[in-house]
Image (cartoon, rainbow, N blue to C red; front, side, top):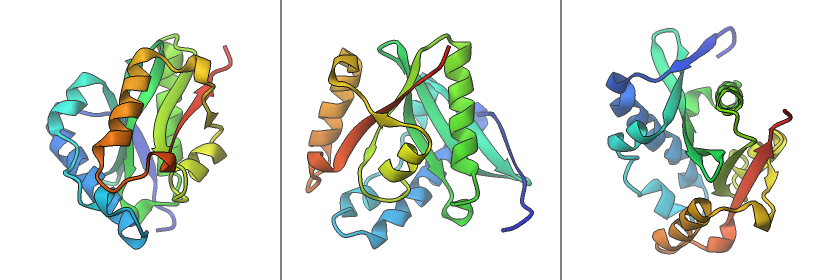
Length: 173
């Protein structure tokens, strides 16, 4: 995949179905990990969810290869989902999408980005930490974020709430 160029732009309503399929494809990476069947087998993100926030898409040539879905939450910008097609994983697409999310947070004058993720898979917690995210202090967790954390911890049968973490990235303003 050398010499492939990517560009980021706002998602269009007509692309929401494609984004749902990208999220499903990205989850296939979990099939190689023991204990993550609940991720692989969960239904794709509902198309309607893209209407509740702001999404950006990553393009390569004429194909969408990734997206980030963000929602203002508790005075921060919550990254509700970031997914990249497995074929372009490791080529900087996720990083470009995070940069766009950070730019949006700055435009909205929000002090931080926040997300929930798994601790272990290298493309989850370790990758976000390499991008400057760190565990959010307990006192920074608002009501809406806590509700998401509780829902995610109880939602997947067979999942262990201890496998998840909430990370944030305060912005320098």
